Image (cartoon, one colour):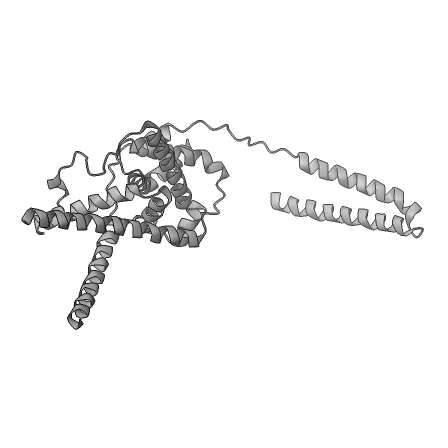
Length: 119
Length: 186
């Protein structure tokens, strides 16, 4: 009985050792990368196959800028028109004045910042 | 013209990695040039959307995996048998890299390597991909997770499962060989 148990222990230790060795061999085999045979002109061949790209326009457009300036002019006109009528009369008029004013200041800051980055 | 030159440099810098990965993933040298070409053309088409959030290598691995998947699907449709990595023009003698080592040992090692390659091709696509990226390409769990768009835990699970399947297949093969040797000796 004791012999049997000793044998079992011995064979288990042997199994573990065999398994560990197999694991090591497996990992070693997985780590070996195949050696590719790359044609010498491969990169040039790929480059020659590249589709032609639509040329990017280098002339900048200023549609956004003009729209911003236009909006500022409209906002300024609205502010000037509303000021004598709304100021001090109703809370709605006052809120609207402040909102337009804030938009105007926001646009002015944004435009000046953009002008600096463009220049 | 400038872009073409720069791209040619990109191809030159990454061609080894793309060829290696495709070779291991498809298990065949057949059409590997065409597949690698496809990888780089896909990269070129995707470049305008490339925002530099990930490394170009991560992007390339992702494309290579997709191209390999398309190839597996094509093979399954055509029902073509796999051509082993080793059945190339180079002979056994060319592959014996260490002349000082025992030739029998080298042949045994080579056979083991070939068995691993065969068993690797029997794994699921995702297990094979993760094993190749982790062991051969030495990518980290995070990089594999980013490449394949999988959670890190899933990457780990597939890696362990793939290795376990390979180990079991190799063990079974070794046991069969041992049994066959015993029977021959009797």
